[in-house]
Length: 376
Image (cartoon, rainbow, N blue to C red; front, top):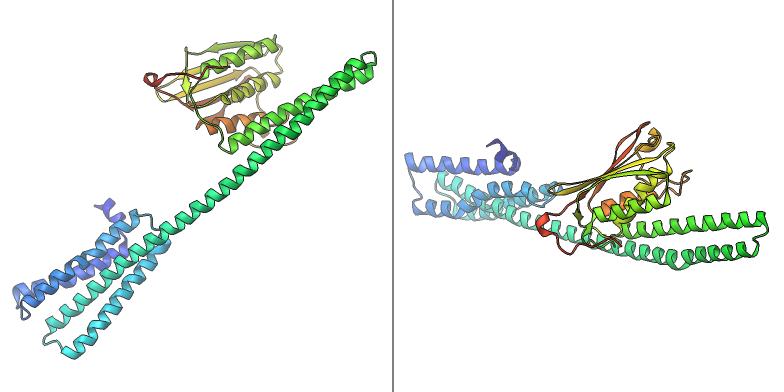
């Protein structure tokens, strides 16, 4: 009972109780005293009964509707206006016809008040719902326009990065390599050209990360079906080949299907690179585990590095400029990619003995696994 009452608008509930109380008094008078109005009272009671129940219905419907609480007052005003206008009209008629008894006067006033207030409530409720829908439609239109503008801007920036900046970096790197061959005998010049080549490669990596980040932010990443185990195995093999001193242990099932695409590979690559680049141990060690549940796939990447500094833990997956180790986009990009596939990533553990990253992605039931996208 308490739960039901908590969902009813108190003001309208009290209004309904007032109407019911008046009608109840009339009924008692008719039953135990007299009914001088006869069929006239009965017809008035029957015609006003639906309007007597309207405050209860609207009071119950309003809190569960889409109508904002700020619009409740407008509904009340409609009810009050309906009551006053309809009652005033009937007062004019009563003045001319002059009721013959107190019962007739009370019944007439009650009849006019209930119909006026109930009718006003109905109009107010419909108007409030219409206004709410109009406002939501307008907001949706504005959001759609903003999203379209943002998508257009991201597409433009992506195009600039792809065709202008990236091409320029490629030209710089190519010419530096050619110049290094021509100046092979000049050690100083060769070293500087090597520096140019190295930074050009880093610039290409930054541009590539930014492009992927723009795609993920613009929700342009289509979701297919990929095998997390296949992607991780491929990236682990790449790290082993590039970093001969790193020890990597894996514990993974045969497959773990998630709704994502090949961009997920970059997220795993960044986590593994992070575990290697920031590891100061004599023998860096990484442990990669994959657990496949009924509804999720959980990936853990643990290392034996020095841990994440306390000052960086809270904003590890946020934008960072001026990082001394890399360009600061790796973990930001990783977090954005994981979230774009409805997953989560967190710093599960960190300290002097190492760090553990935990990634959770929505999984797929074994019975529905077909045509898995293979790693390439």
